[in-house]
Figure 1: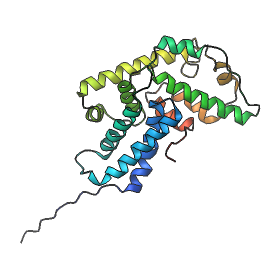
Figure 2 (figure 1 turned 90 degrees about the vertical axis):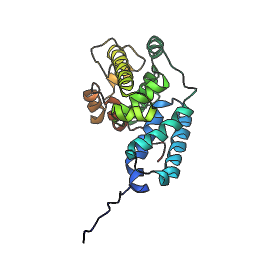
Figure 3 (figure 1 turned 45 degrees about the horizontal axis):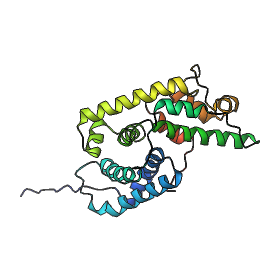
Length: 232
């Protein structure tokens, strides 16, 4: 008699999914949407939709692709009114008047500088269209492949790859010219330069300076700048 063993696919539990993906969904919303309250609402709506739909997951794709597809759909809907800025506008905006720190204590100053730099990073990403920004964020923060991205946005893999490449080049050129963190020897004259250079930042910020040229800059900055988790 021949015994046939049927292999059953084991799907991750709600707790496992929450541990691995909740923070990433929050980070994607945070970078896609400038208004913190709208970003928080979008992250919460996306996560609720993911958990509600979990029972429908059949394993026909990677769980990560399935999760980011739902999150992308919800966050893009919430981001429909996001403005897209030219790099020229961003350059002029960041140089418009020097900011003064509202704090005297060193720890408060460091926290404030981190928060302001974090806002700048989200603002810089808005030189990209909503879909370009989403693709870049999913590639950089979530580390998704071109194939996974093409499935999420329902587009050809070659097209997605080109869009991410163009976005990466555009951001690199802007940061190289305008951001003292990205290029200490560049022409940065933004309103925060004095504080970024002058404040004795902690070791994790020094790590940011070392990793900033890596293609996963925004993934690293998520940890180093202690971005608030909208789903915590």
